[in-house]
Length: 507
Image (cartoon, rainbow, N blue to C red; front, top):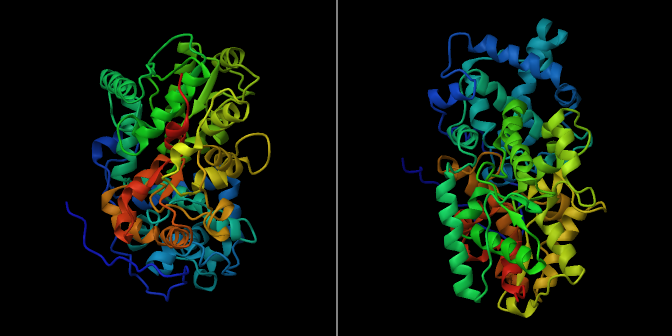
C-alpha cells in the first residue's frame, strides 16, 4: 500500500516552536499485527468484547509491578517544561505530540479507575472513561513516540514519557491491538535468531561474499567467522549490518579491527541479532527470550568476551538489562549465569561496546590508523538517543559521548559538532526509533526528523560537513530514507566504523 502524500516541513535557520494544529496527526495509524503473530506472542488475535476489562486489568498489573509508572502518572503538574522538547511535536505541530499531552492520554484513564477522586469526581480531576475513541487515540499517538526520553531530560520531576508510552503499547497488545512492524520482528527473532528472518545458511553465504569483497579491495584475507567455538570474542550486532547499506560498511570495519588487532572472534547463527524490540513494548518476558539467545550462544561457543555492534537500543538493552535478563554480567545466581560468569574474562567490561574496544586499541597503538584516508570527508556526529540517555561507555561519566567522538577524531582530520543544544544528553532523535521505522509511519518519521535535519543543515552551511556518523542501525536506516526529503544526499550517513574501515592499516 502506497503511503499517503504529505507536506514536507521547511528547514529554517533555527528550530522553531510551531503553532498548535489540533488533531493534524490523528489520521496516522500504524498497520496492525496479524492474528497469528499476536497469538504467537501470547496476545489476543483481535479486539474482543472484553477489551475494556482487559485494558484496565493490565494497567492495574503494570501499576503494581512498576512503581515508577504510578509516580510518573501522579507527579506531573503540567508546568510545560517538556512541551517543545519533542521532535514529533516540533515537526507535526499536533498538541497530542507534546509529551505532557501524550502522557495525559493514559493519565486521564488512570485517574478514572485507580484514584478515589477520579472515581467520585471525574470531571474535577480530568479523569476520563476508557472508550474506543480513547483507545484509538492511544494507538495513534503512542506510535508517534520513539521513546527517546529527551523530554525527561528537561522535566523538573524526571517524568519519563517513554515508560508511559511503553505501558500504553503493552496494554494495546493485551487487548489485541498490536503493531505489525514490531511484533513481526519479535516473531522472527524468536523463531530464527534475527530481526530479518535471515536463516543460518544465508548468513554464512553473505559473510563469505563480504570476505571476498574485502580481499578484492585490500588484498588482505580478512575473515568473518561464524559459529567458531573457542573464539575470544562473540560479536553481537544488528542484522542490518549483514547486507544493508550503509550498515555493512561498519561490519567490514569491525572485521578489520579484529584482524588488525589479532583478536579471535565470531558471530553466531543462533544469536545473529543485537536488537531487542521487546524494549519498545515493555514486554519483559519477550525481551528476556530474545536476550537469552545471546547467553545460549556465549555458553555454546565458549567465548571470553561479548562485544556489541553499532545499534542504539541494542546497546541500551545490553548495558542496562542483560545482567538481570540473562546473568551475562554479575549477580545472576542460576547455574547457567554462574557458569557464564566463570567463563567470561573479568578484565574486560561485559558486555563491551565496539567503540570502546576500537578506541582502546587505537589509543594503545595496537592498531594503526591513517586519518588522511578520510580527508574527502568533513564529519559530524549524531548522538543516538538510547546510547546518549540510557547507557554509558567506559569508566568515566559521559563516556557514551566522548568515546565515539575520540574514535572519530582519531580516524578523520575534519570534525565538527552540531549545535550544543542538539547533541549529547540533549540530542534529538532521528525520528524513526522505538518501533516507528516502517513505511506506514513515513509521515511521522519525516516530520519527526525536522529538528535533526535543521541542526545538520546549519553545520553543513557553516563547516561544509558532508558526512554524519552515528552508531545506531535504526538511525542509519531512518536518515538514509528521510534526509533526501530535506535535500540531503543519502550517502552522507554512515557508521563510525565505516570511517574506521577506511583509515585502518592492514598488514
